[in-house]
Image (cartoon, rainbow, N blue to C red):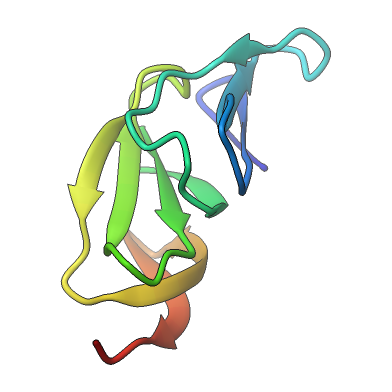
Length: 102
């Protein structure tokens, strides 16, 4: 879970179903819209005016971004990797994961 711009955002692993949610108060949640409903979303962060989430997926290199925590857009990462976390600081973000050879 992360917080930014007055919004809590949570992502989940597994599926099918809602894998991202947003809340202004931490009590009432709105389901997010993602195109990747079976990804293993493991971590999210608020950075540079948008939410960023990464996936622990061994088939496709995936991340997604959202301006509001509800509407998400897929992003492709530069390598196939099991991303386990993402963080932001000093004007940039970093991901942590295990690189997979295919």
